Image (cartoon, rainbow, N blue to C red):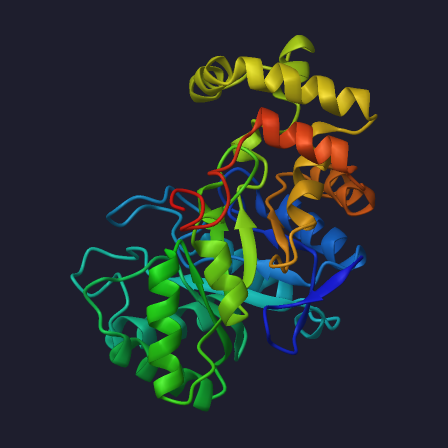
Length: 329
């Protein structure tokens, strides 16, 4: 396994992070345990979850909320040095109940959410506590006060964000600096060959502030995982996936042909393309089975030539570079 610093922090995390959104939903507990055991055996130390994982992520209380954390907690409770071998990351923001304060990022909510996550995870501290989304109604003075208190109490070690815009990252970091607080060390963003908007302003902000990028959905929801070949092999797709395939069919045909031409699997090429970005700390992969986890490790050994990178840019063009040069002189 390869490791990198989590942003500008001294903490080292595996270049592949285990995403656990499927635990308790698409993946049962026994299989989840197998995946976590295999991840640790492979040297993966960054485990990413969220309080809301385990059921449908939509407003209102849904059955299954907190189940992913509970499964991880029961896995950790087996002992054997499991807790000491992983960097445990979870999130706060999404609705976890019907009450007006069961969501978002008030100091009231952050404190209660952290305690609830610690209980479900059966641990005394969260290594990386991430804001799942920006809360435009909560002032940064309030948010950082709550996070600082958790850090002082030893319940949280580092703080991260997810789905922030570039200007929100800058605002958060400037507010943290004014309090002599470290602020954010990581940002989870939607980033893959089919979704490159973050190249405009988010990635430049991350580089400037020393915040590590943790891309989620690196395979575009499966679109970059060899979807055309799987269809030819008789694999059935959801209506949503079939619609996406038809929308991107010319690009997918060119992409899968390119991958075949260089002798690599489409999923490995998609992950390797992300891993070459120096702002990136780790790619979050969300396997549903141990076999899917094992397959993803191959990407660490894939090297993409300059010609291949140019062709990928032609097939999946980005926004034209970084802002403002991408759209202004």
